[in-house]
Amino acid sequence: MVKSPLNYTGGKFRLLPQILPLFPQGIGTFVDLFCGGGDVGANVEAHTVIFNDINRSVISLLRMFATTDSLQLTREIERITRHYGLSDTFSEGYEAYGADSARGLADVNRAAFMALRADLNTMRRGTPRYRKMLYTAIVFAFNNQIRFNAAGDYNLPVGKRDFNANMRTKLDEFIRRLAVIDHRFSTRNFETFDFGMLGADDFVYADPPYLITCASYNENGGWTPAKETALYNVLDRLDADGIRFALSNVLENKGRRHEMLADWLADRQQYNVHHLNFAYSNSNYHTKGREEVCDEVLITNY
Image 1: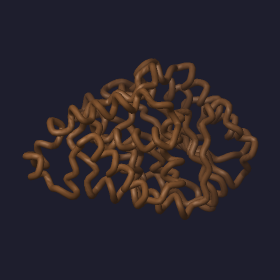
Image 2: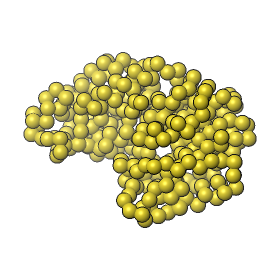
Image 3: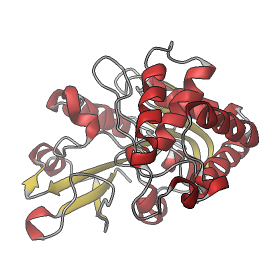
Image 4: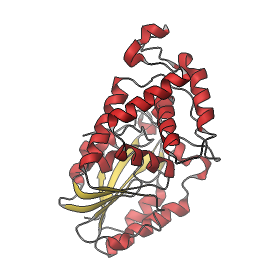
């Protein structure tokens, strides 16, 4: 399996060994309805994969990965790194910056990163230059994550790492994977996505923002009970049309039960609930202790 070079909050890479065996065999078109960084779509066995996400910046980055040679993109990132005076431990090691892996590079890169981020947020979004700058900012940002404020500006602080060997490997492997799968990109809202093109051999995977968690995608009112209900209605229509689907979500998180999801499932005995064994080490809503258990589930209609 390959991991996305985008460390998307709630990404499913660590859950793939549990999720993928629960997917049906012989998938024609696989719709990754809330694809995020693309971990699931890049690893599923299907004839065609549609990466869909309403976040146009994310899809723009995925398009860049699909259309840019790995070595060429690496050279562009290195050039931007040199231009802003950011660290390059891949070539120079930590010693060149008076730092070490445990302490990290935040103090070394903070000023240069803020200059890069400021320039990025003045650029026209979606251009080839913007995409390369954005990905470079992600490489040097906190936990290599993606977050925009209400104005659309990238607003994460500097992180501890740089464009190291691990980041380079993830980027190269992901680009190579996209090159060998039949794929398309889409930025449709889940309510307006054209499901009419799908048939009995196709499959829809929904990994929406989790209503009862506090991840960054729920800042600024990103996901609401109304959207949750709308998604349930979409899934019910897919089921009525004979189209297979799977929904990732949580039934319990930090002592809080997802009552909307539980009520929806109570009236739909035909759906199956698979409880998964996982803890998100990268998310700020994860916990240790019984009162903070996260009951991650995969809900299927087959």
